[in-house]
Amino acid sequence: MHSIQDVKNDQSLLLSVQHLHIENERKEVLVNNLNFDLHVGETVAIVGESGSGKSISGLALLGLLPENLTVTGQALYDEQNLLSLNQNAQLAIRGKKIAMIFQEPMTALNPLHKVERIIGETLLLDGMSKEKVRKRVYDLLCDVGMDEPEDKLNRYPHELSGGQRQRVLIASVLAQKPEIIIADEPTTALDVTLQSQVLNLLQLLILNHKMAMILVSHDLNLVRKYANQVIVMNQGQVEEKGTVRNIFQNPKASYTQYLLDHDFGEANALPHKRNLVLSLHRVGV
Ligand SMILES: Nc1ncnc2c1ncn2[C@@H]1O[C@H](COP(=O)(O)OP(=O)(O)OP(=O)(O)O)[C@@H](O)[C@H]1O
Ligand SMILES: [Mg+2]
Image (cartoon, rainbow, N blue to C red):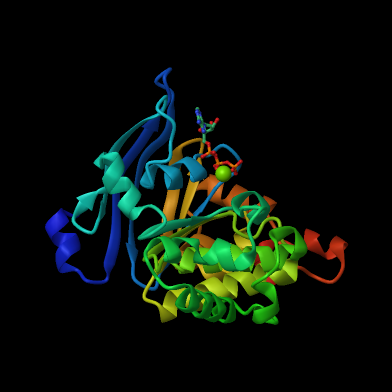
């Protein structure tokens, strides 16, 4: 259990979530006693089946849950408890220090704006000149590995492929230079090759920019490849947590074993679909 002072003293500790608890208005527990630390350069994955409480855990950190849900516990970040911030303090952190990447970029991108404006809007609002913003947006598009970035500046989201849209979304998140990215199923809408490209990119950015990531995913192959720590959730309860190696090689909870037996993910998709019946163990987990 860390105090605010601990988080202040440990330069590498970005976020410490302690006893995160979420209930609905009927007092049903949706997340029970979630605890984890997030260090610079690290990816913590939250896995579990649909409805297990993965997304609401991420949303709670940003104060994005509706009022009918009650959140208690601590999420220590930058000498504050994210779970008890007032709205202004939340706005200073949301998107700027801690940003979220959602599954479907089309719904997250304004369809009426061109890429340059989508990525550069917050920079313009911060008072950066138009020329500087254009240069910065161009650099961000290069950072996220966009082909022909110059040409993409003037495109609308619908004129881009799914992978390109996801890159625009990531660039717009990076424009704010956040320290923590919460990526909620960031690649589910993408094909297998693009999934790996986007996750590789995020991992590289995290290491290069001293950031950290909370990766919400049901794809265990992706998690195995990109996370350091794994939290396994089941109906709001934490079944198990540990390093990727421990969770995959030596799962303690029967639920984790169940997930390993039933989820093949697609990150390492095999050429023929029928081969997917190979168990995770046989693909090298
Ligand atoms: N706004 C809300 N109001 C009431 N209950 C909610 C709300 N959002 C989520 N829940 C409930 O909280 C539980 C966890 O939901 P959550 O969205 O975190 O699941 P998840 O693990 O992200 O699932 P999925 O993999 O399907 O995205 C579910 O029982 C869900 O019905
Ligand atoms: Mg979810």
